Length: 207
Image (cartoon, rainbow, N blue to C red; front, side, top):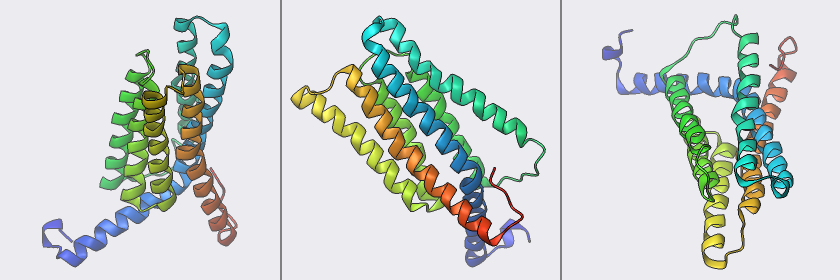
């Protein structure tokens, strides 16, 4: 049926179908990506926190580049494994992918800027992308965790500005905690959903 001939009810059904399709894809590929980038970020944050006292200011900043380097390589290898699998995308997929591409490139650009609030800027950028994904696809845990993660980021700024409690080294731990909340928790939730679906589809496998 031509798009111009759809009535409002049919248009809504098409949108619901696209959201449902993208939601299923997020539950599989998205779960793995959230866990991958979440734990790479958490481990890098801990590494930065423990190594910072033994390195100069310019050298310990390079530790953060492990996140795009390690995460990017593993993501690329995972994509190569699935390159022959059939895949069709919708406008919702295109929108979500664009949100993450723009946010990710801006976060990468921020990583080359030294300063206390660079990490907070990255939290806000990727937290916004996570929140948009959660609200568009109606994934409640992703909505809540994204908002909570950004709230922790803003809260750390308030603590630093009003009480002067946090050092740059402390922000490393805040960064790790935020990404555990924003990415690891939703990733485990989505992965658990896959496991539940596998019980009713014995021949399926987790990617």
